[in-house]
Image 1 (cartoon, rainbow, N blue to C red):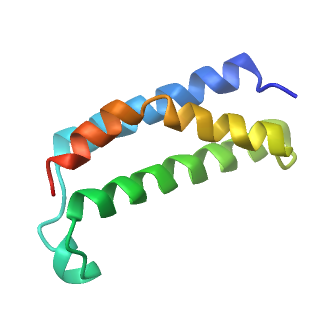
Image 2: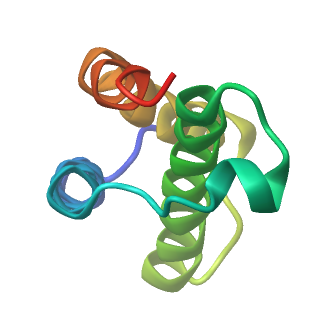
Image 3: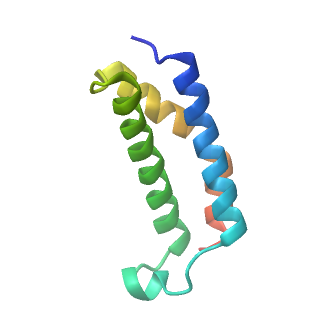
Length: 95
């Protein structure tokens, strides 16, 4: 079952808008210390992707009042992955 076009559009906007916020605010200088990670950019990229997928899945549940079927779940991942170049480019700055 394909995703509703309006839901897809709103999810794409959520990702773009959230990435823009990250780009304006940067990152905490304590990330490496708190999370004990060597590659801050990789850590933050994974955090961001997880945040976007989690937010989209929660929004799906609210929008549709049900859990996504596997096909819909994969489409949500694909929406996030469609912006991978911008996401990776930004977070690579922190490595």
